[in-house]
Length: 83
Image 1: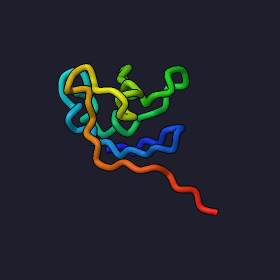
Image 2: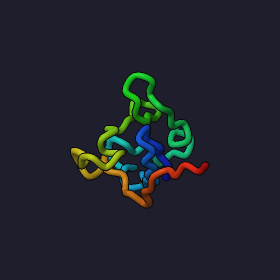
Image 3: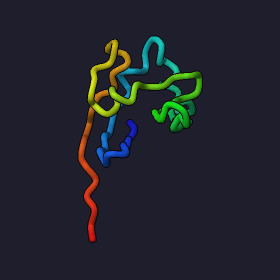
Image 4: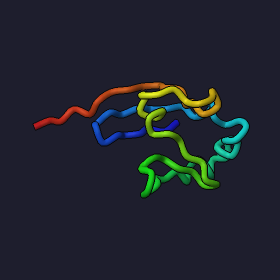
C-alpha cells in the first residue's frame, strides 16, 4: 500500500497488490516497491524498471486502461489545516 498526497491536498491510500501481475509483476518485490519515487518530469510515482502510473488514475479522475493498472482505493480524505 502507498499513501499518495496530491498538490490539491487530496490524500489517497492505494493498494497496489492487484497490480503485481503481468507488466507490473516486479512490484511484488519489496525492494522494488520500496524504491518508489516521484518522477521529476512527469510528477507521478515511479518504480525501478520504468514502471509508473497515470496521475489521473492515481487521483481517481480516470479509470486505468486495463485492470492490472488499477490500484484499489483503501481510503481517501483531504488534508485539514489547523490554526
